[in-house]
Image 1 (cartoon, rainbow, N blue to C red):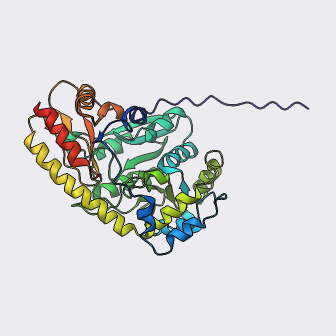
Image 2: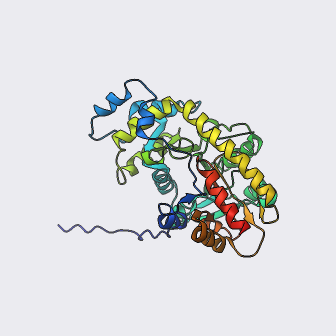
Image 3: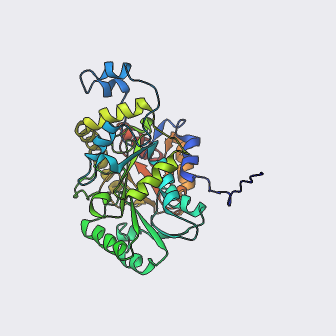
Length: 378
């Protein structure tokens, strides 16, 4: 008997513009002024947070780990939420794997997806590569980056499988109000569609109330978290999805068998350690953010004739715009060449050539900002 295996259409996915840009400059530029994460820690600093942690790390068994994540780690992650249990958590190699897997199991060809935009490219591009119809839910600077709820209500249809939101938002720093969030949930509930909520900057709110996680306040809500952003531990490559839908969780875990299978045991250990001491870590990162945000406020006030910006409400990034006509690609290129300072042009988000991302979650931001000011004055 001859068995012939056939495959469907080959998945074709566009280059990840932002990541390709960083691959060229992130580890070469002396001053990063567009980093999306917070100040990191050394392993020594993490181990010092808990007595006996160093010895436990030395004794760690380097075999395979559980596909869904270590039970203790999932229990600690579940503690970040109000209603989910450890069984509602699946751990991934960073948020990127979680996004890729969820979109693949949730969406099918010709399904309709609505994505808050601008966005991290994989939140829309993975669905595009599957042959889905992706609609950008545009945010506008002149509206304070507030997305138009009427547009969402008018655009959702019987083929809409999911709505993708991001709060706090990358790259604008916008933070949705609880009233607006409830409006989004009401619209999704009427159409029985999923809301996928990228919440990687949760816990970095300032001057505004923290939103409830989507997995806590909507039965078809999926929340995405990661150690990279709010906690500043990108090198651990640990992210997770929180979801109460049993069938969706089963499909996600099954798909993961074709990607990483399981996570790194040392990364899980250090993530668990960091989450147990999250209050210390988050308080330190918020302190850095607030100090740097004050400097940025003064900077943009002093150069209001050159830039426009909507002050962010949460997170370590913002999305200012140039008021002249030179374009941010040219501006960022010359700044890097002459002062060694890296900014991220808005074109990396598929947006426009006026906006750029600025990051202020790291301790050396004042030095980078000073060199930007030197460039402007020169």
